Structure formats: structure tokens, C-alpha cells
Length: 150
Image 1 (cartoon, rainbow, N blue to C red):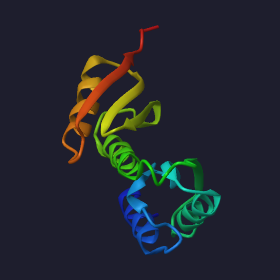
Image 2: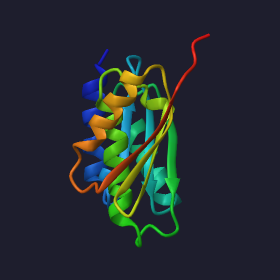
Image 3: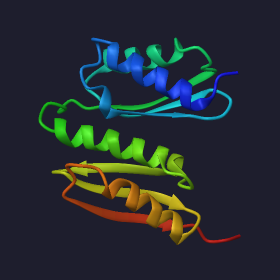
């Protein structure tokens, strides 16, 4: 069985090679230990959305693909913001100890807003640090809620 890092690397490579997907950095890729893939981020149209999901499904070791990609009709106006969103989502996926599946990111005029729920304040800080290191971000609004025990 192939490891999740190898599968993620192969999916990212497939997205970068696919001429139907002009901005592959806007797509974040998450792979769990059994080969289930989640795609998040923004694409311009349904054709790009289907192409990205198809590219992921074609990679050896992928069990299932959950397509959480957003289609934006105004993608040309906010190209930089969408690329930052994809990079921020990927940074959260790559950060150890962050429940990235419970965090969403919005970017407007290079300002990142993180929303969702974490288990503890430490996870919120790790998430913020992971995103803060990305080039091109003017600021971060950390609106992550800490889950109440119980």
C-alpha cells in the first residue's frame, strides 16, 4: 500500500500537468492513511472541478475522492486571493496537530480569515502560524472556536 505523502505528491503532480487546470496551486489536497482524498479550494468552472477530481482518482493508491472544490464565477477578479486560499488550506493540511477538515479559509484582498473548530487553543495557534508564513498574506483573522469538552 502506498503512503499518503506519495499519493499526495502524485496528485499534485497530476494537477500541475493537466492543461485543463490553469491554477493548480488553488487546490489543496489531503490524503488519509487508507487513500481517501479530499480536494478543497477554488476553480473557475465545472470542467476544472471534474478534471481535478478525475486526476486524483487516476492516481495509484487512491481509494475515494471527496470533491469539496468551490466554483467561482468571479475567479479572474480575485485570482491572487484564490491562490492564497489554496495555499492556506494546504498549509493547514500539512501542519501537524491541526484538524484541517474542521477549518475553512476565506481570503479577501490578501487578508486570510480562518473559521471552524479546534480541540484546544494550542491547535488554533499552530493553525495561525502555519498560515502566517505564507508569502503574499497581508493579515490573518483567526476566528477558530475551541470546542467545549464533553
